[in-house]
Image (cartoon, rainbow, N blue to C red; front, top):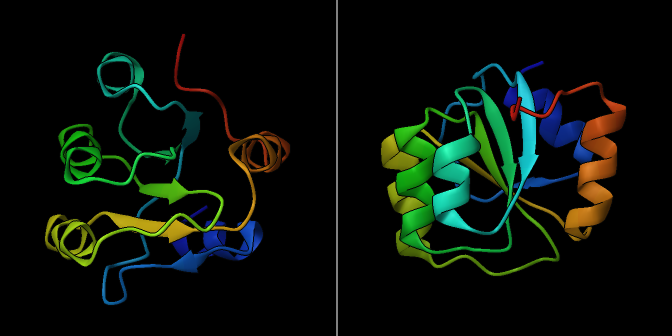
Length: 115
């Protein structure tokens, strides 16, 4: 599945318009500790996190993640969204909790990248 399809299935909004939505989503991970995500995340991951600052985009870029999903209608600063667009990382926003999003991602058959 690609990011655009995932956004539809999550009923999530694309927060940084203009970013490509054709990246393949191959796994999903929920975590709010950057160093943990850096050690465990992989390419193609849809990452659910409540963190919404520039370092999230740096980690997502470093690992070539498919997208970042921000739960609970958390507001993301425009500078962060601009950096995400520049780096080609889609940022999705949802009113659902991290718990709800994780359940949906699991139900979609997306594996956890942590082995």
